[in-house]
Amino acid sequence: MATVKWTLDKAHSQLQFKVRHMMLTTVTGDFKEFDIEVETAGDDFSTAKINVTANIESVASGSEQRDTHLKSDDFFNAEKFPALSFTGTSLTHAGDDHWILQGDLTIRDITKPVSFQVLYMGMIDDPWGNKKAGFEVNGKVSRKEYGLLWNVVTEAGGVVASDDVRIHCNVQFIKQS
Image (cartoon, rainbow, N blue to C red; front, side, top):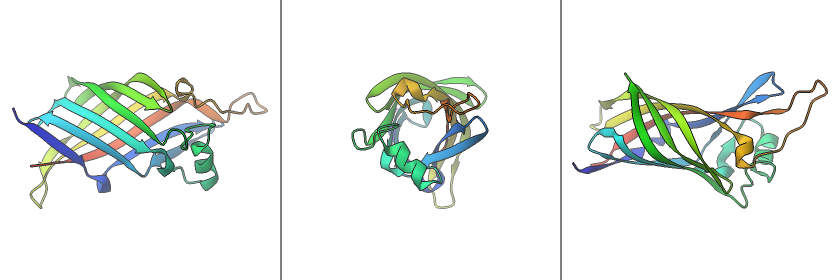
C-alpha cells in the first residue's frame, strides 16, 4: 500500500495544556507554533508515523509575565531547549472511535514514554476537494519528570502550580496527493 502524507491544517488545530493554579483554578496555555508530520499506509491511521514539534517561544497563556516565566530556566528554558517533541510509537484501536497513542515526549533534554487517549472525529472530503481527518487527543504528564521544577508553597500549604499537566489537542490533517 502506498505511503500517504498528511499535513497539519494549522487554521483548525490547537495544542493546549492545562495546569491547576493555587489549586483553585485551571490556567490554559497553548503553543502558537507547532507542526505535526503524519505518514500512513493508505488511509489507515493505525499505521501512522507521527512526529510533533512545538516552538517553546510561541507559548501563550494569556499573561505576558507568565509566558516569560514559562520560557525561563524555571520551566522550559527556551534559550537552551527551543522545542519540545513527541514521536509516536504506536496507535492502537481501543473500540469505536477511541484509540491509544503511545510515544516518547521530550521536554528540555528529558525523554519519557507517554500515552494519550485519542478520539477519531472522522474523515471527510471538504468542499474544495481535500480529504481531511480530525482527532481530539487528551492526556496527562508530570511536569517534574521533565525538569520543570519551579513552585512555591502557599500559606495554606498548597502549591502555586500543580505537578499534573493535562494535554489537550484538536488536530485536523489534509491528505497530500
